[in-house]
Image 1 (cartoon, rainbow, N blue to C red):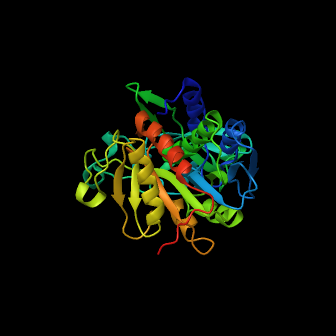
Image 2: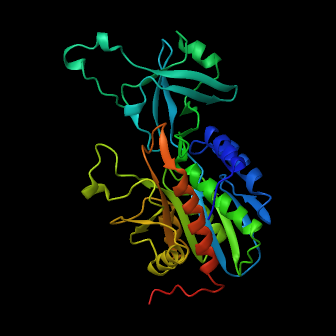
Image 3: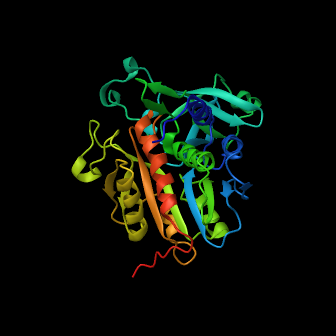
Length: 359
């Protein structure tokens, strides 16, 4: 079974610590491409930054394994005369965690440091005592007292903002960081490519290892690259909620727990025959897995692939994650290893011109 090496974890740290907000993923994509280039036969980048490597290129049957590279963030939306910065979301950012967080504002002059300020508890009386953060009242301070000073730093309307934090390993077995959703997926598919190379697996099809952009703002990178590659099969990996933490209702959110293996999704975009193949791979290789259901869509790049090109058999393998869209997203190392192993073993069961006809 897969055991992640120190070299792999060193790359994971570097990759997660590098900011890659939606629409501004280029530096992270450079890191990822540099890591996978020794495990694939070709590398490519499309016009909007989706990066991919190809193993065994030129075959008529094309299989995709995919994760997404972008993370949530903020945009500068307004700068007051006294130098405070108001923001709007870039993706599904959670305003409730913003107060007192440190941030990086990305400008042409480089990173500008800032903080999300918040009124001290001593100053909040009466109806303001339990003041709640909203997108209308959160603000960033960059150490300036005039709008002109802010502009001189290089900060302007439209600059993108990310939280500042560092990757860590908690209790020797939990990965914790800002952007596990979903650069951990990009990491996992890179490790799958490495396994194929190291074990000299001969695939009867072309394998596209795809790290898409702009998932957090509408699955846009996957939508574009699906039309470019025109795959016959797509296996997507993303994150899903560990529902065994306080304040989560299992009857509503489902029963998924960190440490019990990757999660397979049941939803209209998920192709039943491909899902069955992945389950066969898990059972054959004794890889633990969990199950989850989505009533209409998966909300992941699976949907973009499934409904492209007249319909592409697609499936979703998710990594259980705690505290999604915060700066302390948490995944268990064993789940990551089992995710990599499950994708790898599933690929070995797919045959050239595999019949995934629904009936």
